[in-house]
Length: 167
Image (tube, rainbow, N blue to C red; front, side, top):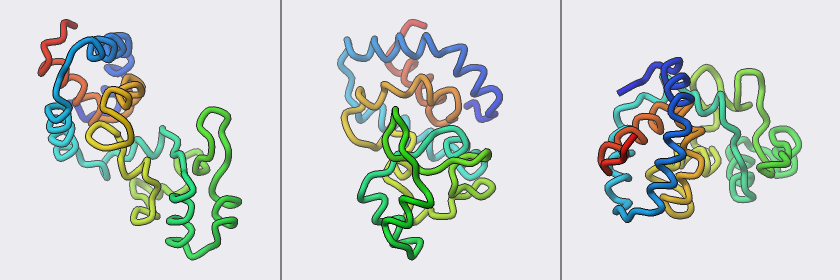
């Protein structure tokens, strides 16, 4: 299992095309999602996210109306105050949490300061075992996530081994 973030970045970039081919290959083959979910859960259990927090440094966090309600309540502010002070609108992604040079506005060191009230996209990250839509639809973003998330990188490598994908 690779956990060094420099290696993850280098290997993820090197395998980006291969991971894209794997994603397309999966569409043409039939595999039980539960096999992939089990592998992803094992990788997540073997990874200390507090030692990494790279997702909070690299990825943006989309927020829904429900997320805004939950965060506002958690922070003890109104919905409008939360939207004004902690979110912005991205052309590509819609409403997202503000980012600083260090990453998510709520990241302190390697810890989320709003962990109990965090958005659903953060709760489900890295979207391998959990998330909206089918596993295959969530696979669309995995080649990118494999460049910064040890869980995704190692899961994709294990998925390839599990399915007999030719590299």
